[in-house]
Length: 560
Image (cartoon, rainbow, N blue to C red; front, side):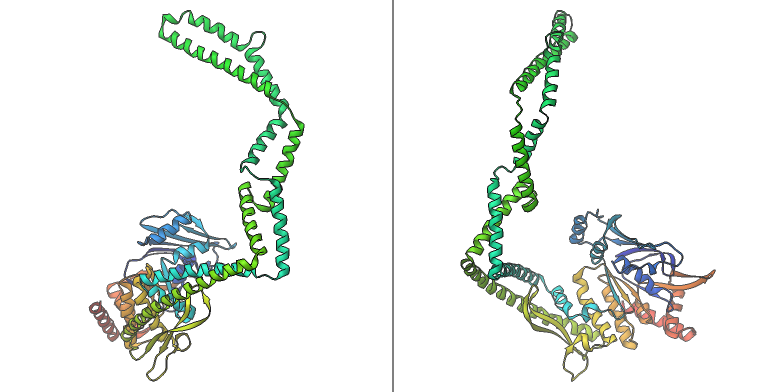
């Protein structure tokens, strides 16, 4: 649910903050007052197209913020975590900032994100339907998706099984295509693979950690003189011929041992010095051994450098680590064997292909059968909804069509057909439905899908345009039904829609000091009655229009 919307320097809006409640909220006002601008601002939060033209004249940037109640959907919570966004159990804050210099900053819960990420997250929070923008209904490619959304868990399971079968089928297809390259390409590929295999084999890669060990050995040889000098100096200090550290500590140890019986402090001191004395002796022995074993081998250093260069060249070609190079080697050995024995592998692949095809067709047939079952249920549901919207004579059909090729979403396409009038055959919805019919179709579908899609805020931008009378009342009732499952924000010019709403905002614009400003007021009581009367009568509000508005409000209370 959209709880609060804050807009600054957007079109003719200088600064505006609106708090929303659940249920159905309408925004009304004269044409051009800024109603659709508010929806455009929400659209910007939903990842809509950004343009510097949206920034209020004379300002440097526009900022739009939306505070949403966090829906009870674990998927959205996990999605935000995946994108590094700290999710809040209660709220989600979307922010969009546009600057005149073209800078476009998007944030979710204060975390910078791309517009694509914002759009993906917002798709779980906002669903905007604008006048003449019934994209899903007008696009037949979306109809199959809508049918699957209507489906139950068993349909979802079948779709998942089909997608897995299709992925395996496609993988085998790809392997076959690669093997069936023309002979010249195969010969060229064999030459390349043979060269690469020989190059890697000649390197004799055994130890995955070889490079690190070589680098360590190279560092020791390259710094032989410095290491030897350091060890020599240290040994002379610890155990040289005259005045060395170990002898001096030994003298001190003898002195403290003569008095250690006089107190615990002296005993502890003697113990510590004794330990240090023997540790220094051990260190001197270790240093002596290191010096005895050290040797400089220029040939070995050159050998290491050559080996490291070989590994460097292999890494540049075949992988960033020895382990990756070995994995690449194993893969190309298999590929070379496949190409060299193409006929044998093709026979194996053909068997796998035939088996995968049979499974895919069977799973696809089961999926289509289930979709047809759900299609019949959807037809009944839509017919029932259309009756309530005074399209009781209309016929709605879910039509299945054979695909020219097997695709990832099934074996058949789906398109919605409608016959608005008696005696007419059903035809594609996208081609014959009028604006008013599309509005009612969209509301019928939205009423059905709202309970399953989980969108928290649905916005209708003048979707009731082109209808009147009893149809207008039916649309008003249907929008309110949708609001029982999701928050609904609705821009309308229909008094019937405004009357049945739970909250009513009046939007007007004013010119102050030669600048246009948009003002929003939540209206109740007599103000709301007067606004509905204006919507009924136009500019001149009469006692009759007031009475009619009061009647509409009373009827709406009974309807709710």
